[in-house]
Image (cartoon, rainbow, N blue to C red):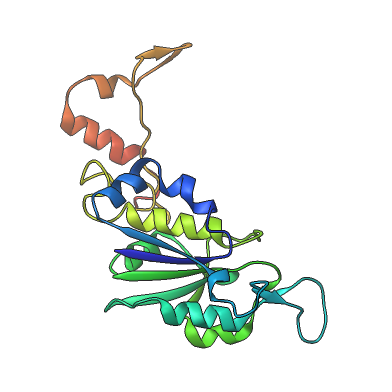
Amino acid sequence: MQFDIITIFPEIFKSYFNESIIKRAQNKKLITIKIHNLRDFTSDKHRTVDDRPYGGGPGMVMKIDPLYRCLKSIKRKKHSKTFLMAAKGKMFTQLTAKQYSAIDQLILICGHYEGVDERIKKYIDAEISTGKYVLTGGELPAMTIVDAISRLLPGVLGHADSPKDETFSKGLKYREYPHFTRPERFKGQSVPKILLSGDHQAIAKWRTHRAKGTA
């Protein structure tokens, strides 16, 4: 799967995408992440990506023309979708992560300032939000979406069954069962005896019982 991210702060992505599971997924060519600097698609010597809003008001608005040129430059795969990161957008959930994992290419636009020129809607499939809050830009939501989708792709996680019983895997109300590891006792707290029994059938039943929202 390929992710194309449009941003005015390309350096932000380097540290996160070059560590841990996401880095290994890229090395194994399970995912491709391309970062596009929006300033490279401006037409003036100052590389201007924003301007004052028509009608007045605070802040600046991201310009439509460099965004259009950038989108036109990105080579599209057969099954491609384009999303704008926006607080007012459709809520991104585990269910949408699973749906988007079937897409060949996801193009993510990171907004900034007061927002993006409304005419961008002609060139995107939807606006996406990762929560009911407002951030200074769309970079963190874009990283969140790449991470959430990537880990659902075959071969990205260490074990094929890892995503099957985790929180939200069986619906948005589902919460995964508790986990324990060594040491067996810690400051007066002990691992449940059932997990030490070796009885895998009983353990599976205990985990099902302890999971939340299974009904």
